[in-house]
Image 1 (cartoon, rainbow, N blue to C red):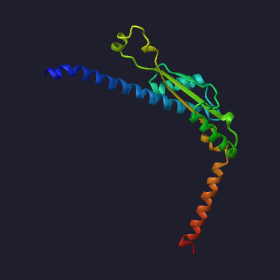
Image 2 (image 1 turned 45 degrees about the horizontal axis):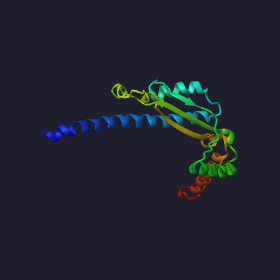
Image 3 (image 1 turned 90 degrees about the horizontal axis):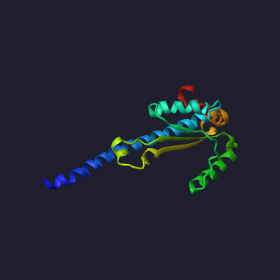
Image 4 (image 1 turned 60 degrees about the vertical axis):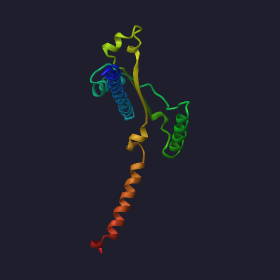
Length: 174
């Protein structure tokens, strides 16, 4: 019985942390999905205004809670290895499909982390209320807008060839 009394506060704290971290992880996932959605919307031929899009993602992904959206243009460059590898791939694809550096869309979504009143009362510096959870995404317009490239014409051509071959092979046509 004494062991249970000693372990109970630790178990309750562990359970509380699991619930709290699952909420934070859910907000992180929503921020990533909202950033992808925003970058996709911004890559369209007639992109929406950033303020309107911010209201839309706040309503769709965060139930109207305060959320900020950064729609500043970016070329997708980064100083880390993944960013430089992505830059090389973009260079190769741009040489094949065509340059789309002016069609790169960027969206970064920031949402404040939830702070429970019990946890906030333990923080005398009020630093917990300044924590934000972010999601960021880049989209190249050619990756989303098939009508801007001739890729779909190639697929139509392949589909027509397959249809002609199946018509030739079909015994009903003999």
